[in-house]
Image 1 (cartoon, rainbow, N blue to C red):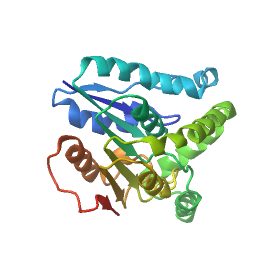
Image 2 (image 1 turned 120 degrees about the horizontal axis):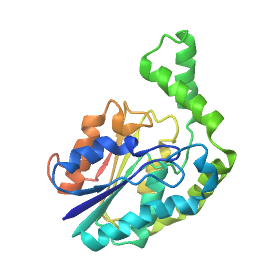
Image 3 (image 1 turned 135 degrees about the horizontal axis):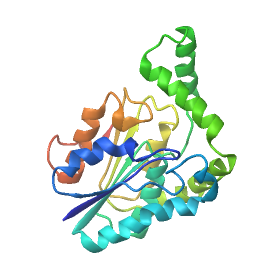
Image 4 (image 1 turned 60 degrees about the vertical axis):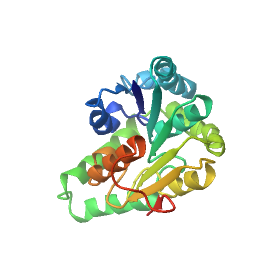
Length: 240
């Protein structure tokens, strides 16, 4: 049996990676999308956990999958990508997929561009942009400062793991990501030691990449990388 563990991002939920999980669930794979510690009832429960607890939330189901599945794939989104990379160094996973992994977080230029567009249109902009702005305000006011400190510490510590990654790795980055700087993807590609690695930039996608405009392309890239079927990659395995 093939197992696939998908890890959501900071202050997020499994919804962020659900389209990818649904894509592979029909193939008889064992799919796990753990809710990271404190994320079941944010922001109140976020005050009770640490960055180590977030890692354990994904590590426990991963260890179980490794004991019951023939091979296990790891897929991490945003902060979940940092956790997935860390676990890929510690455990014998078959392949690693990183989606908007938050090495360098907050892309001020894109953030201001989104907000400026919203203000310019007198808040009659597309519904997706209004929802994006609402989410910024909600997270900015509700996320406990303590949790943000733990998030930053997790990034600082786990960033060191990239130089130890040797497992085949697929890196996908939204070209219009408004929370993670797109240069994060290039940093990961240049730092990991994997002989098999790919980098793809999806030009129309923002941060919630699994639900964005390039979703069909995203699913195709992940499917081909994990199953070996579908479109062939370029000679270098590096696409912008």
